[in-house]
Image (cartoon, rainbow, N blue to C red; front, side, top):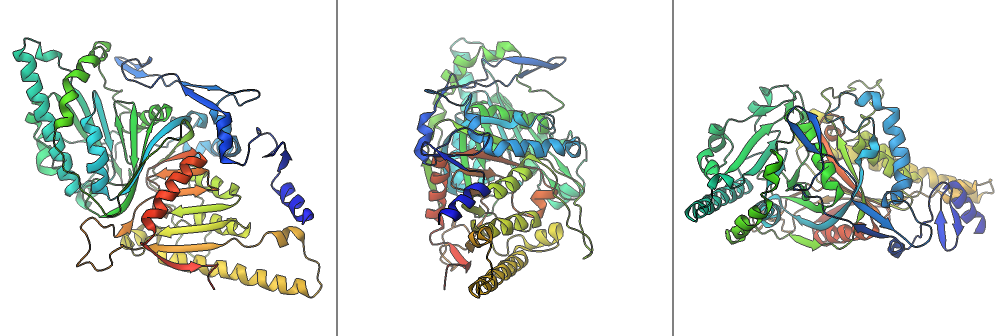
Length: 582
């Protein structure tokens, strides 16, 4: 027994001292989640757009310079920053990105290529929510827009007529009417209406229709919709109403043939808080998730936004005199909470307020690539995925996993992910996969040449082949042959694969917002690393689409998210393989 334990510790480079396991070159980390209480993280101030330090990026352009606003205080010997908690992960991740940096020179965005460390930050996760797209928008995202004082940035991928779009139209209409009335009241009271500060709203998306994508400009400047098309093509309020409420709206699209959609989804309010949902402005009743964050990561998210959507225009926030109007904004818009908004409820809705404190975080962009690198012939080797921060992070997490991997994805057609999961299972890591069956099958075939069901069937077959080889090796060991201790320790990990299904299977009696497919993108490794965002584990996300993920290292956060998801999935899974079942 002691020989096996010593071999395991040697294999993974572990040393035991003072009740804690350490690895060479890393700080002392206790295995108990409560160990995090030894570090006290204190935010000096919240990032705010009225006190941002600015730096010039060109004539007439000012942008806030991103600076850390986090102090770390600890008794005795302690890391210099919370980011040292990510040291086990980030060093190899950064090394991989730097080794392949030449491949990323033309990425969109590419601001991080020379310095991957710029993506590393902290955040304070405020909440995690599960529901459908319509329920998340009407319960959380649209009310957040109502609370905006200066700026709203809404980025999504798909834009379609839907209850979500109708609710967005309704809230923008009511907001404009409310602001128009406030302006009239200010004028009647003798105030200068021109001093009423505008509300800057930027809406960005990629896909509205096949025709729109087929004839979309290939310029990275994208296409800006003229105001006259807002009501007719986009389902948004008339420009005259928005102008009367001093709402400065711009709607922009980016798409690159043949398959390169801009797939990220996020909402930033006043550059102080952000939401990263998995849902689009669209009609599908799918299971979705949304995390709300504050802290340093919001500045990193703004940097990503500028690098993609406003790279040629600056930040557009006006001159310094605008910032001085902040107090009046708060006073004038304080009544927006009285604007009525009807929430759309889903049977799958679950909202959890979080109190996990300042959390080590990495923003994970993944640029689009127009060349899908197809390998249609059997003698061709599998293409290596582009070395984006998100792709490299997922592969590295699967590589360093020591106990468990939980993967929830709409589709699973990325051979790089499947191979990495098999390698993890070979090391004895337990793997759980939740995905959807027959979801966007045509899209899978076009972008991957295969489907999730086909890939899972192959995955299961390869897993069972490994099971058979291990059983045969064990049988040979019983006959007296020498058994390598390390091979004996490396038992095949347990594998569980499930398809999502609606809680009410009968469509005739199914509630309107009961999710019929799972669109949540979630990876949890070893109960401490959690990745959320837009990236699927399919070939499109790994090769052609632009994606955006966010990595948190926190056992408490991973536990909260995992428990929430498990609760919602409790009556919504069909298990097609459970290696523990007999």
